[in-house]
Length: 161
Image (cartoon, rainbow, N blue to C red; front, side, top):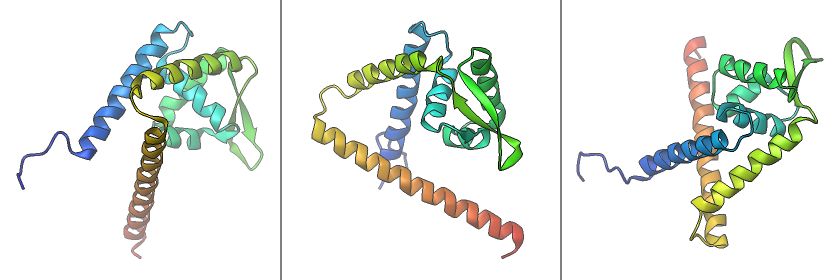
């Protein structure tokens, strides 16, 4: 086995594909004339899928800092696309909801996303695509479990347990 990293190793390929896919999505959204930045578009779609979630939870699911999310939310709220409502369980927290005005934009973002994925997956059959999707979901679940294990280990070290 060589000591040189293999740029075609699975981990590197996954990172490259994710980076390239994000870049292609950002270019599509920027040129689609939706009036949103790519970050705002990702945020709006995520809010729609997590309707009524706390800001902190949305930021975690998106893998961004809460302050970055707050900037996106401020802009989306100023456009009338989202509402921040008090969390009845925690008066310090806000729950995020889309407004009816967001529907057309969410549809436009989804159209761009579907068109892009059709181009990206060109030449891959439906059965193969379903397999890839299933395997990627398994990788995501395994990585999520690793994150939970790491968080538990860190907590145990901090508390001396």
